[in-house]
Image 1 (spheres, rainbow, N blue to C red):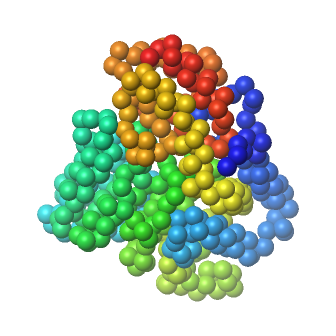
Image 2: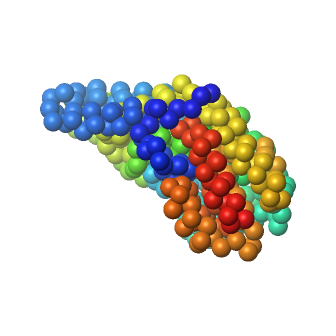
Length: 382
């Protein structure tokens, strides 16, 4: 895959390695958003079908990306919203517990903590092993070993949002399936840049905000809910999620029945005439590239950085265990993080510090110049 910077409007003097914070707009996404804003200038251009058909198109595209039926996909405004829709419909018996991982993203942790408080259940937080090499495999093993018949639900991110460690979702999902445990995954930091298959990984709910690796707008997202959730209770009771809700002549019949699949979990006013066209344009481009190709591109891009870290004898996990689009670089204990970050910013390099590592998150708009600029700054501090 070749560099795709020409499809973005990133300044030439900027080294943007912070896609895990927020993606830049594709030019096509920007244009779709502007067209969406202008459309409401003439409200007559928005027809009844426009409240539903664009959403179905977006669901179909997302379904292709994660190997799911469009009927099981819902439009959400945020990851926290999608998570709450899922967790409030997880059955739990007295004496059961829930599992997550340490230093999980706050929305995931807080949602699960409230669930456990409401049900007087124990929240088990699985910590990583005290190693760097072998850390991913060891952490996955601890998670799998902790799941048993008393586990009601596992809530975790597909990769660790600070370190980029690729949890073995297939192994975790298989253990959840064997123990009748619900498996809820926050895919915000991987879906769109790393292949995802909800069927192969036995995922019951997959939640994704769109403004990172889906290259979409803020305050929008997508969620997959398996058939286990098809009789659940949603957060909202919108007229748009009811059966035949697209028939405006029947709105005041107040139907009790929801639409098929995960329709009930759509946020109210999901037919956002600005955000949906932007998200559609983004998904079309990602599918055109292929998530696997994006990951391969980023892996090759980071080759000089990995070689540099080896030369510096900085410890890291096996290459295949760490995502290439979100790469956590563990710093030596004597590294002055504040000075390092100040120097990084001074050289027009944009990335994030998370925990005890710096998070390097490239995409197809980055090139070798971006990585070399980072290495030159690192070399003054490591």
